[in-house]
Length: 179
Ligand SMILES: CC(C)(COP(=O)(O)OP(=O)(O)OC[C@H]1O[C@@H](n2cnc3c(N)ncnc32)[C@H](O)[C@@H]1OP(=O)(O)O)[C@@H](O)C(=O)NCCC(=O)NCCS
Image 1 (cartoon, rainbow, N blue to C red):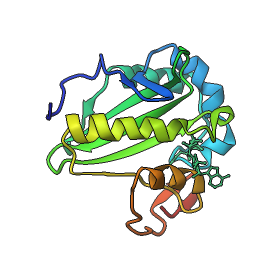
Image 2: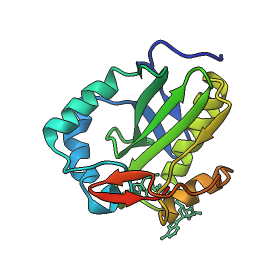
Image 3: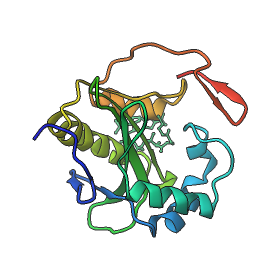
Image 4: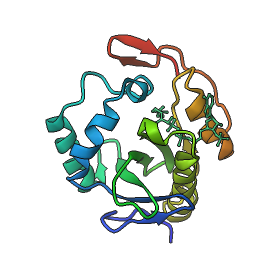
């Protein structure tokens, strides 16, 4: 069914390796040490130092999303779990421009779980079921920092094509990043 759902409270997407579900408040404490790993932080557009208060606030907001901002962009964050386990080990977010039907994804995964195809599975189920079928997106994209070969590996496996490099696109912790 195409269209923008009013709420994603009951969204559950099951892939071959992972399950995507709405964020819960108890994710904050568990995800904080995993998210705080410098190998995660250096590749995402987050400035500063993650705190428990910040994570709780964020998980609370994410669990009641989607929010639709003044530009008509809807954002929603889903927790990534391995099938059969009930703990979040990362997140996958979508940002959807309702008018133009352009959708951008962003994700991170806890370091011990890297290299097992988990985010490829998560992004695949999200783009096929949610983005294209349910939301009727025209295009799905990801902004990836230059040099983030793992993340590029994920989207390449999904059939994304490189659109170009934007120089000094984002300022993160005082450093300009190309994506
Ligand atoms: C990027 C990230 C989400 C990838 O998650 P993942 O579950 O490990 O990814 P997958 O295992 O599904 O796929 C990774 C792909 O990257 C490539 N890859 C893996 N290890 C690599 C390495 N050391 N160097 C280069 N490429 C590598 C491969 O193509 C691999 O696919 P494979 O199954 O064919 O080996 C994870 O590394 C992460 O959270 N990084 C920090 C945050 C981040 O970069 N977020 C994305 C912002 S755009």
